[in-house]
Amino acid sequence: MRDNEDLEINETKSSVEIRKIGIVGAGQMGSGIAQVCAQGEYAVCLADISQEVLDKAISGIRGRLDRLLEKERLTTEQVEAAMSNIATSTEYEAFGECDLVIEAATENESVKIAIFEKLIPFLRDDAILATNTSSISITRLAATTDRPERFMGIHFMNPVPIMKLVELIRGIATGDETFSAIENVVAQLGKISITSEDFPAFIVNRILVPMMNEAIFALHEGVGGVADIDAAMKLGANQPMGPLELADFVGLDTCLAIMNVLYDGFGDSKYRACPLLVKYVEAGWLGRKSGRGFYDYSGEKPVPTR
Ligand code: CAA
Image 1 (cartoon, rainbow, N blue to C red):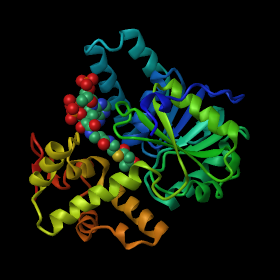
Image 2: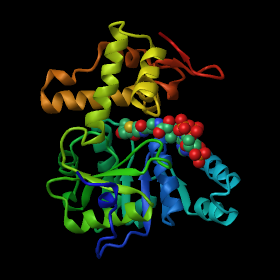
Image 3: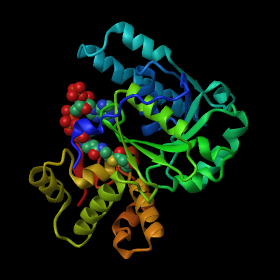
């Protein structure tokens, strides 16, 4: 077994220097990635098709940095410097100056492929394209682009500013220079990278999402209610959030998408999504982001719904 120190990645030599990072998608993950990149002193271009989503992302980043200022973890100068590192755009032209573009759109293969198709004409030939996919084959996504050797997976965890880990995934064609350039970026962000082979859902979600799905089966079968299942795993297994609370936090649509990638990728019935998870997604009950999932978020405190 390797200890934590072994997991620390030292800066690796790479002739590719990343200065400007583009991020496609300003939702929960994209805005977190933009924040940590800006704090890591990269110039950031954050793009989304919706100006409203961009405005919300910027005010969320400002709010989080201001809280760090209040706690005296950052100085006013550091907050202002980070904010001034971020530009936003609803157009992809802005990515023409980027050394690295990270796609952080919804966990849907055809949406990601459509984004690459639209984005690639604006990219420099030597730019690296990475995806924050949490489950989809990097090799298959890379093959839809013009640059499989400069394409790879860089999977951040939610909430991005807090979670230490970034999973790095090579596609079959990913070049060594691309990989080490991304390792260096992760190190500059103050995060720890691990490498996963390109199998469905990589390492974290291969283990974590079936655990959440199992908790939903336990709820579905009446083994316990929402509060008991979450308390069981928080107090009995020292998890910081119960599995149902975590599923709501990640987004039930994302959990379902990942279970489907596991099921399709391995053809093994142990990965079938719980029918209750499917029903919640069909109802539009997607967790925190839609105001209702296994908890109701409309009041001051989340209330279990079952
Ligand atoms: N963004 C930024 N910072 C946040 C945050 C957010 N969304 N939520 C909480 N924080 C910060 C707080 O400001 C606080 O900071 P300080 O310690 O500096 O004061 C710190 O996190 C702790 O917050 P709280 O005391 O309010 O709450 P907590 O102790 O319950 O911690 C948590 C919150 C860190 C999110 C913790 O509950 C946790 O670790 N949960 C599990 C998260 C997890 O498993 N993430 C992985 C999800 S899977 C994934 O991301 C992969 C995928 O592809 C689906």
